[in-house]
Length: 223
Ligand SMILES: Nc1ncnc2c1ncn2[C@@H]1O[C@H](COP(=O)(O)OP(=O)(O)OP(=O)(O)O)[C@@H](O)[C@H]1O
Image (tube, rainbow, N blue to C red; front, side):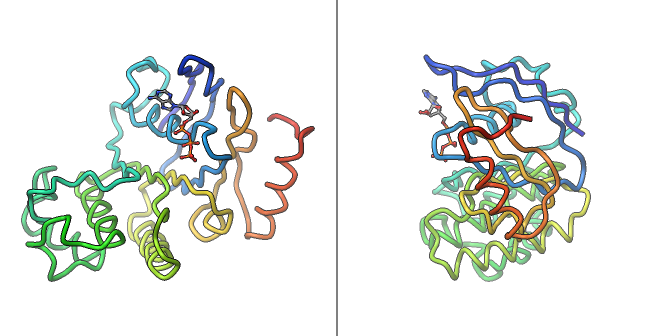
């Protein structure tokens, strides 16, 4: 679906190094890596938001609709949830259904600021789905949520991925458990400049933890 041949990205100093990989339909990728390594930078490059990255570094993007769940919800605060979804092209019926899919039936007329953080994030997720994405980019969707809300959102995302089997997902997280709950593939980004030190299918959390421990060893091999 997408071929990445990113040559690098610097902000004064190099952040991303070469990233060559692909994303296929149905991929559920967890993107892990140390804080500040360049995970959001990579998502922005994939989404086409970073104009410093040449367009031909991500082949196939013209045919791929992207839904991007940013760290902050970015809903228009003066519009109702229903109106926020309609603004990106959803019909009234689809917007109502999507809000129901994320557990927000009854909140259609609410403004984003009238919601809890977890609810606002679910509303933003519904807006992502309203564009009928082929690729869902999730940037730390569970950050700042209490454990119960985070678990609910994880189950919601996992269920959505089952309901939309052709959709691909790249989810940035700091929690290796999320990789085994949500993903079938792991990207581990590390180094200065950062490259993918691991890009492969994954198994359970025990395997992920062991793998990450190995990758974090200073002499870890670069793939
Ligand atoms: N617009 C920008 N201008 C200058 N520096 C930037 C910009 N965007 C990112 N950076 C720098 O690039 C590096 C990588 O940032 P990025 O947000 O991609 O990391 P991250 O892995 O997503 O971090 P975290 O896990 O803490 O969210 C950081 O050192 C950051 O300061």
